[in-house]
Structure formats: structure tokens, C-alpha cells
Image (cartoon, rainbow, N blue to C red; front, side, top):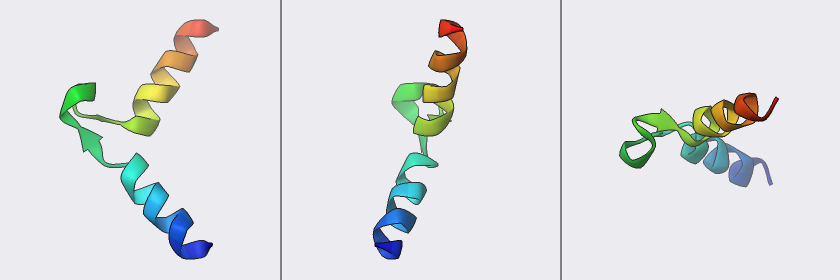
Amino acid sequence: DEELATALRLINLRPRKCLGWKSAHEAFMDELSHLA
């Protein structure tokens, strides 16, 4: 379980070209801030 959580954390924090070089977490938080 700990190993899986670590792998998911690394994947979600990796910058993506398709997201304008934001991480998945950053892109998600940006979208959430637009909803408020």
C-alpha cells in the first residue's frame, strides 16, 4: 500500500507537456479554484 501511494504521488507530481508543463495536481487545483 505504501509503495503504491508513493508511485501515485510521483506520477501526479510529474509535469506534463499536455497540461502546459503543470503537474496533474497543479492542473486539478487550478480547475478547482475556477469553480469557487
